[in-house]
Amino acid sequence: SDPPRRLRKDWPRRLLNELVALFVALLFLLAGALVLLDTAPGHRFIVDRIGRFETASGLRIHIGRIDGSIFGKSQLRNVAIADQNGTFLTSPNIKLDWTPGAWLDNKLHVDSMTAERVTLIRLPKLKPSTKKGPILPGFDIHIGELRIDRLDIGPEVSGNPRSGRVWGKADVHSGRALVELQALVNKGGDRIGFHLDAEPDRNRFDLRARVIAPADGLVPAMVGIKRPLDLAIAGNG
Figure 1: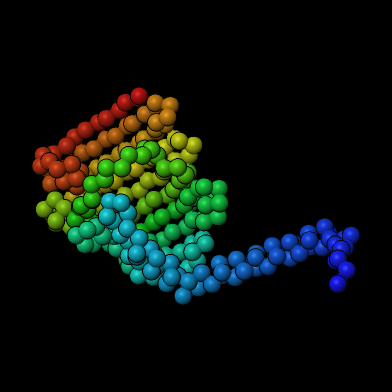
Figure 2 (figure 1 turned 180 degrees about the vertical axis):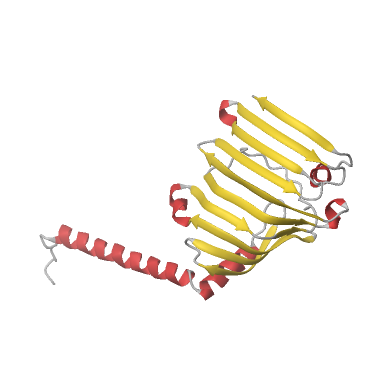
């Protein structure tokens, strides 16, 4: 019979070299996959996957195509958001500047998300949900700039077509939410100012809001009333 085979004395070093070589090979494969993902076929793959996703409330997002790089600055063309009754919001182009590597640290980091034009055709109809969960998400969110240069509001929303603009920012970090939002609708429409500093786990709730809206404005339509609003809200809790 064959004599028993013995491990060479340098087997730890050889094993380490093999593991390093395997790790490097995996890195090259991952880099190659990421490069392929940031090509036209890769963008189409992402668009198709996004189109198949539906939230618990029944919302779906359709993107015509992605230009630029998905790992930095990109443009989302022909964006449409739909509920169970069809499309209710569209935009021909949304510019996105984000840092996808932040996902490795459980963060969604968006430097800016801007759109020259967004059309709100009607208010969405969400599916009711009985699930209970935390108020804030389990990951950090940073949006340095959120801006819509022109928001077109269709007649189905409140009866009269109007246009306006929206800008704001948000930061959700370590269970604390800081949100700033401003909106202005032209031709005697809504004027909205909103500031929130909330930390639910520590019973912190600082809210300041100013809302001025006509009876046929956006905010009355959203809350289901038909009378003008002039509200100033401030409170700590």
